[in-house]
Length: 129
View 1 (cartoon, rainbow, N blue to C red):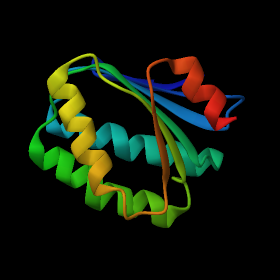
View 2: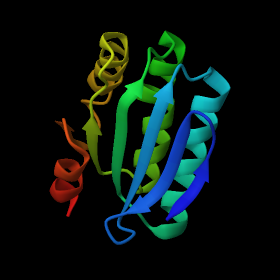
View 3: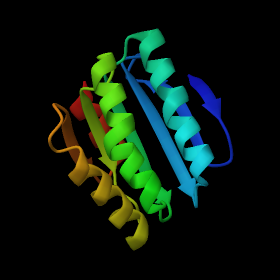
View 4: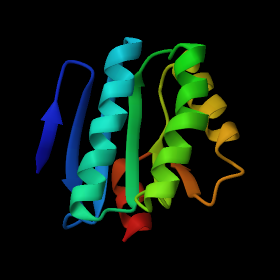
């Protein structure tokens, strides 16, 4: 069930509403990226969701400041809320998008989050089940 959508991201509940799926696309402006993550966290809180899937196959490069923000400020807020424990990532087809994702994933390694990379959405959903 779609919770919100704009030209850069679709956020929807998946796995019988036990996970939130974010499907990203294109070059995402900073304000849109941060707003989408904050809105998604509110949805996770409302539905008591701890599992996330980020489908970034169509995402392009993400600004370095947004990578740092996501990997530090947002992750800290999400983990402390109790609504971010496990995440499957369907990696970008774009080399710059891959580099952006890897930078964020490196910065969250010290958090108590279980993260796994996938090439197919169904694999990630199955892993979260």
